[in-house]
Image 1 (cartoon, rainbow, N blue to C red):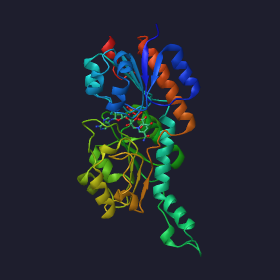
Image 2 (cartoon, rainbow, N blue to C red):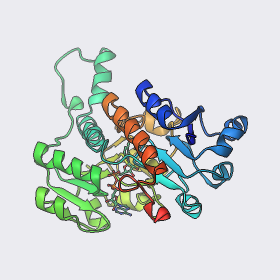
Image 3 (spheres, helix red, strand yellow):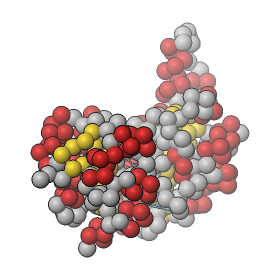
Image 4 (cartoon, protein in one colour):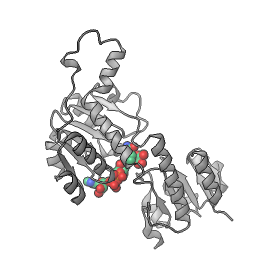
Length: 324
Ligand SMILES: NC(=O)C1=CN([C@@H]2O[C@H](COP(=O)(O)OP(=O)(O)OC[C@H]3O[C@@H](n4cnc5c(N)ncnc54)[C@H](O)[C@@H]3O)[C@@H](O)[C@H]2O)C=CC1
Ligand SMILES: O=C(O)C(=O)CO
């Protein structure tokens, strides 16, 4: 008999079919308690779980006594209680690598659009303000040859450094938990402690996972260290930044501008002060959101679940130790 799984995300037809070849699939809209209750039998017997963005915590796991593997359509997994998964020896699979280049592209888009005020000035044309030659009130700041500071030199950080260094001639500073030999060799990236990176960078780019250690890593004291001309970019996770401190730093001119793909609360509330600041480019968490990459992530998550439920955990597994 095929193992049963819960699917809590809509997938392209061919991938849905691939899942159905291996598993008995129950599709649900989300993992809210009322949904779990409505499909209690399916949750009680499911051995696999596949989807994205929803919280997977100890309370949900209690409703899934047969669960052996979870597969998230994302590289980040801060919405999973990994300790609770480990305690139950449930595998957690994710989708690194397939999205790296696309997310690095998005970060460059934030860098360019915030420095050159692309969104703001495009809005001014649409509202009929371009009536004569432009003056300094339309100017932005240069990107090329400015110093880029990358906090979190992982897969995406490295792809960002490649673009910034080779494409834009930018010197690269980075902060990470350890020296990154490849970044140093390929891009002449210079390792810095966090404070030095904040003080010296023209662009401060966060590409960090959300963990207990990174929560509110950047707050009032860190914005105060940045150059007044600094542009702050966050494409990792919103809660790595104290958003109130960010708003204050932007309002008080402690930093020049910000480009943000992620927020403490998502979707970003429409009354967020960030949305009324002209020096903020805010995107709705689209880092990996291209047709090609989202398809590749979904395909990777499907393969991951098939692998995990067959005991194959050589790649894309966050906690392979639970089955060793
Ligand atoms: N905006 C978006 O749509 C997307 C956001 N992300 C976020 O980006 C994160 C990074 O993704 P990858 O580069 O693939 O992961 P990765 O694991 O390759 O890189 C993360 C890096 O951060 C470093 N790090 C962790 N804690 C640190 C700390 N306290 N101080 C300094 N460095 C620290 C790690 O050592 C690692 O090198 C994901 O965890 C996710 O939260 C990822 C994809 C899309
Ligand atoms: O993969 C992730 O972690 C995202 O944030 C969306 O691609």
